[in-house]
Length: 581
Image 1 (cartoon, rainbow, N blue to C red):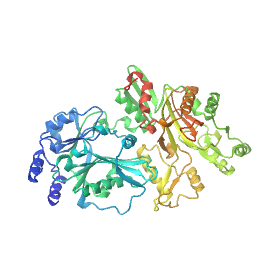
Image 2 (image 1 turned 90 degrees about the horizontal axis):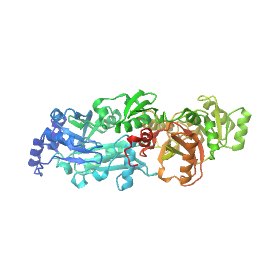
Image 3 (image 1 turned 45 degrees about the vertical axis):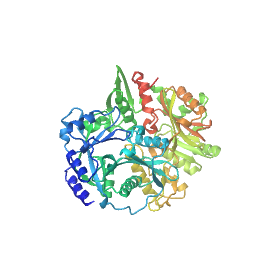
Image 4 (image 1 turned 180 degrees about the vertical axis):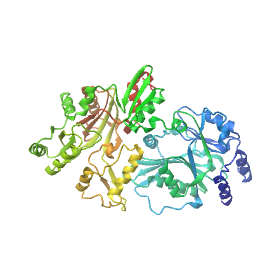
């Protein structure tokens, strides 16, 4: 251990190991000396252990053999300029920082992490869950069939699973360097730390890192390394808290479409929100030219083969002004879908106090919303009291002077995405909720949840601390200042809109045929090529439903891993299709 520490101090001063020194140390310690360079496949690409390569030319050659669609990483490169010189047009120096935690410096957590367990991946469903998580964080999915076997030094993936719901909250990958390349320093490394943007529990990221640290400590390893993008300040703060220190080594990658922002720097598309960026990324993969017209507004133009289409997120030139109006004006949506024979709630415009009170008395429970609104602004659900009704109408009128009253129907909020008159994705949307830890107030829990959502969605999703949230809390007998008991789950909104912190559960494969047929019939009635349809259902496997509204600018990024962006580009540019049929 003392020799490892001394050697590690040389690493921290920039003296990263060379091939020759590594071989000498292996021989000195009586370990097998391998002449073959070490590369480990992790399911999304290979990790090339730089100091196991005999020279820069061999390492560069291996990097240039990167498989299409993958992302290889050459780590522990002592002389990156020599590697880059082999192919300066195709290789680049990765702008990531490497950190090391010596286990002798590690201190266990002073608090316990509750509400979730960390376990290894066990089945195909776990791989599906981890890939859904990775895609939600814009990371490459894992093809576990390509992974180097564990007994040969390959990766181990771990999951954080909610003890109550079974939801996969986060994941991390680890490498044992002793198994991988007979590391004489007994090291290990951490990769692919990801926490779900909808994770309601605090401490999942820290819990995963600590689990990996303690796992490798128990295996007699001496340190844990990791690589983090230079501007990921949130992750760096966590690693500094745990005792990680800078490691002066370098990482080299190949120039490809995935790495493009790293070697070209942020272009105009970097300022697009996630709903526009998912489409732009898919277009670039197919060689479609992208011109960002107004990043703040999500406006861009796609050009391919003489065809040009202008988009605002998923709203494109293919949607007519009439179809857009039919979606925006909720009373017109109601009439259009009613004429198509679809099931809808009772509806009327807010009028005099007497008219509004009569509607409430007739239906008992009502919904209030601005006639032309989006992103859940001004919507109040399950109003049962005349004073509440008047207050809700006043709030909704801030977004549109025309306010709509609808009969309330209990059930799950189902969003169905129809593209080209085919159902592409469906998800149950659930209202924002927090889980108590016995220490923090509900207001603090909401703010922490909002920070996670905002970071994951580019600021597009937050839980507002507004009157509607306050009304929801009052209905549960609590306030923003209440300390929620540990483990208690509390819905803090009644609407399930994603922009106000709602979450999604994919149910695409569970839809009853009647729901599929109703969604397609609604899209055809509106004559709109891309639409998000909102329904209330008791069960996605049952035929009963009530249509609520239609959205002409549906957030495709919310439905990953369903191929929403792929089908959208198929619609716009049929000749660019990259899938059968």
